[in-house]
Length: 371
Image 1: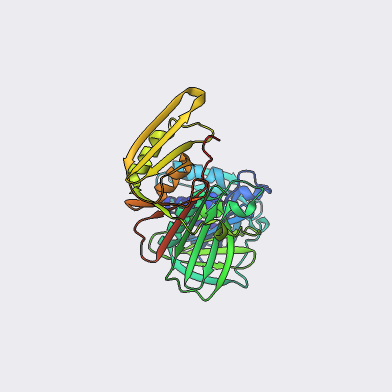
Image 2: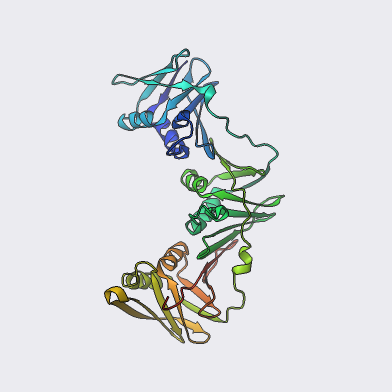
């Protein structure tokens, strides 16, 4: 089997796919890309058995066939080559691969493509199409709030709730929670599933702008396809916590403040906070927000005051500054609202202006002052 391809085009496709390869593969062949050629189209597959990326490109080939190519050495070779046509010749008896460039020849040992694990195909799926920009935004706004606690697998992914014309994405680690909703979706299904963090990280990097993404799903897997690329991932088989139960509804105290001023103040004050708790104290009264922190172990402390609009009783509440800073960087409006019902209940962070068709709500648990 012999085929020719542009080195830079191939490198682009491989860089897209390589993220799916795991660090310690169960099977040695999982360190490879699967190259399969059919009718002058090269299909490249990379997988860690949980998440797989399949991408296609045109090549000039003399026959059809498949071979598994060691990923690391091939990527390093292509990165070191300037753009040019390169030719692969595969020995179909021992799967030896010879690559020819304008500079010379490189030989590497491939493996039988037939031994590469089978990637799940969409079977008994429901599907929904949505703009790539919306999906990308949804991932960016929720992924940071997922948990890393393997003992609570449901929280290590993002919960997708498809409800006919709208999709709700939820992520939480029990300290913070993000709920992002976008409507105007044409869907005939109502369902829920949990997508793992790794798959969403890869998807975020691979999504093109301004294209439609087809999202299909069954009980076991989700399939995302766009352009010449497909991402397949095994869903997290676990019950998602009832997130609506933790969102407080009657929040009588509402502060409105400039997002960037609030965020920059928190960044400065957090320098003086205890490094374990990152705890800052917000003292909010009519027209004024005082942010302070102290680290008694090192006698460090800092206080800043800034104007705000406040409707409610004066309140002092503690939060993890790191969480607030992270949440404020995801909200994109000039002003944000912090809704509170009391110093021991979760705070709700909202943008003052919503983008039409999109809603975002962030919840952050308080840190008990003095703890």
